[in-house]
Amino acid sequence: MNTSVMSPPGLHRLIKGAYEATYERVGIALKAAGFEIMAEINLADFLAKKSQMFVHPYKIIVVCNSDIAHRALTIAPDVGVMLPCHVAVLQIQDDQVEVRVADPHIIWNTASHTYLKPIAEELNTRLERVIDALKG
Image (cartoon, rainbow, N blue to C red):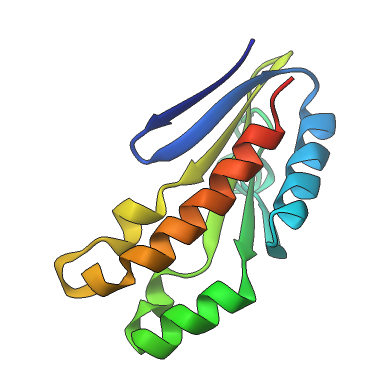
């Protein structure tokens, strides 16, 4: 199964396969779409340390496209609280991984930031390329 769906809070794709291999593919797709990886958060390890409970592999990749970020910050310096983008990669079952990306329209389309819509559109197009690259 390999499906892409737009649903709140954004794009996601279910991928049949091993977690680590899928995680690597996500990183490659992000870089190909012009994103730089700023940080990787191992949410499963964090929760296991704090709660001593087992959680399936779950990582959040913090990414940014510096050109898009610069344009957005030039227009609205307060948009920094909405940067960078987060991509969640979580294991659903032993052979199924979900990749979820926040929808920039939801994040950036507030009444006070409607003038950022073209930038959100560009960002969304790049993120859709990432999700599309994970087909097959």
